[in-house]
Image (cartoon, rainbow, N blue to C red; front, top):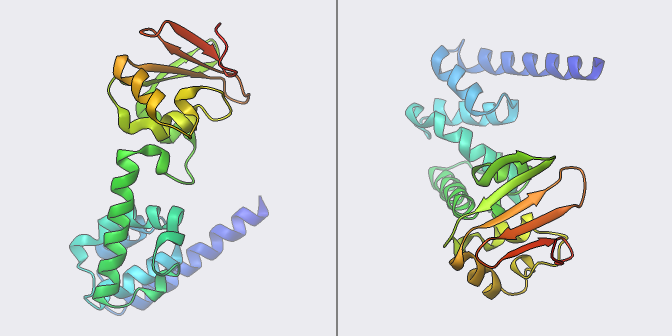
Length: 210
């Protein structure tokens, strides 16, 4: 508890110092600085970088809000960027590359959620979750969504299902073309089931019929 309080105190001091450097000197307005803090998630390193770039007119104030999404992607997958240290993005061209990479990764993650790193399955696959029943979280992969093979493999990890083997996509394509796949996962255990009405199959994690 004491460590958390100390960390919060140091963060407040650090943000106050940034405000003194940029707002008190007239380089940024109060509203711009508030938006920068929100976009940086309260991280002083991100707030300092963004404040400097806005103050130097390298980043337009009207674009500050966009960096909240960029920073989240960078946090999770920075090893895929040209520079892993944000401070190395200095010029307009550097920042253009940073934005392009962030948008590219975000688009790929939106198309195939299994590509998202550092996010809990419960959050990553929320759009496919139907709800919970008898202690199991229930997910539906819609009919025809052949682009969700990665999702099937991740939700079906630890099973013997041919639709989640990670070796061939053919079986998944066959099942999902016929109808939706329903996956039952019991949180905190390795118990999983998969149901396909069209194929008349309700299989346990060992790919044995229930």
